[in-house]
Image 1 (tube, helix red, strand yellow):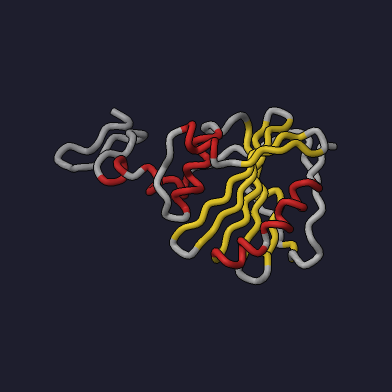
Image 2 (image 1 turned 45 degrees about the vertical axis):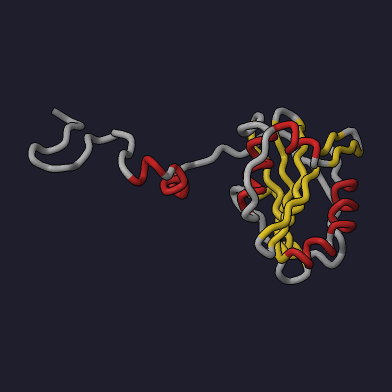
Length: 171
């Protein structure tokens, strides 16, 4: 029968989900997972003059090198992409901070409106690294603006990052 493993082997049938270590670590197979990116109208922005534009990619709507070692990524995905709290905790994990419960997590963010868009901004530092991140919903998509790099560099870029966010506009 098609799709069945050969008798006497440990192979799984075709299309069977992973079991064992690969199943325990969903990230192990994420590199091969296609992620839908946002469609529809794009936001626009004006980056500081000293941020160097890098080529966009299938995942990134925009990308900049910031002061050499900093990286600014702009991504957009359809819907809520797992929810605000899950994404904030993902950023926390990227700088070796533990996850937080919703109330504590949201209390530590800044919120502001600019150009008709509502931003949630987070600042996380750990392990010598820092992430400044902003989330905004627009046109049925969730947009992520993330500046990451060495702690001191990113901390020094915070005023420029906030100014940058205030430049973001809907078409």
